[in-house]
Amino acid sequence: MSLTEYQYRGGFPQLSFGPSLSPAVKRLIAATIICFIVQNIGGGVVDRTFALVPALAVPHLYLWQFTTYIFLHANLIHLLFNMFVLWMFGPDVEGVLGTRRFTYFYFFCGIGAGLCSVLFYPPYAFIMGASGAIFGLMVAFAMLFPERVVTLLLFFVLPVNMKAKHLVLIFAGIELLLVISNVRGDFVAHFAHLGGALFGYLYMGWWGRGWGRFGVRGSRRWKLRNVTEDNDSVDRSERVDRILDKVSSHGMPSLTEEEKAILRQASKRSF
Image: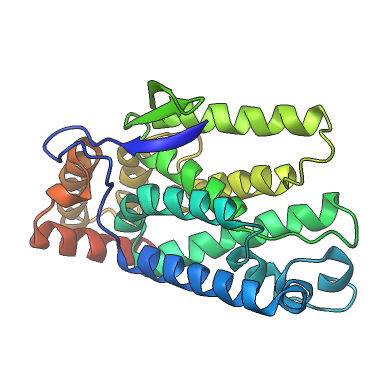
């Protein structure tokens, strides 16, 4: 099963090329590709030093591994899939969270996935890849844009359309089944994937203060309207609500520069 196309509802063209790259997404993709090249040049030395090895990360305080492992990948397919999902889903999530907060979120999910890996995998396992952070990103996208339609190529042949919230539930369910069935020999860190998804949900729940409220309008509106009770705050919140409605229906590219500025200011006030 592979992601092949990302579709916006409303006025934005439904093209398989995906959205334009946002600042944090662009930097993360560039850094990951550079690290992959260095990894292949340096070989085992890079893996032993910067991949997440439970026996080294905690007992010997190789704490940097909890972040550096995110930028290493086992092979080209592993790299391309993770960067593809980051490219497709990252810009919209960054558009709502803001560049700085999105970067925190990405590492929060990646580090959370690493902690889960340390708890559940053998001491000398080599854990690498952005998949934990990517699963957290997919959860965030589904919480912000639950009705957005994504097209899958089932078995790389059959196109299937489904909403973002259903997509994430299916992927999480598959990972959970693989953990329960105790699959051996597939060399995939399923606990890291589930851990990244969990930390993504925790972050978004904290950020929006709206546990269980899928959709950008519900959780974000709740938070903005509880900052203060004065009339200016209420008016500002209502204006932000209208902008967020527009984002939910048509995507970030539909916003004017003024609307983007208002959304950025509201985001700064809320954190």
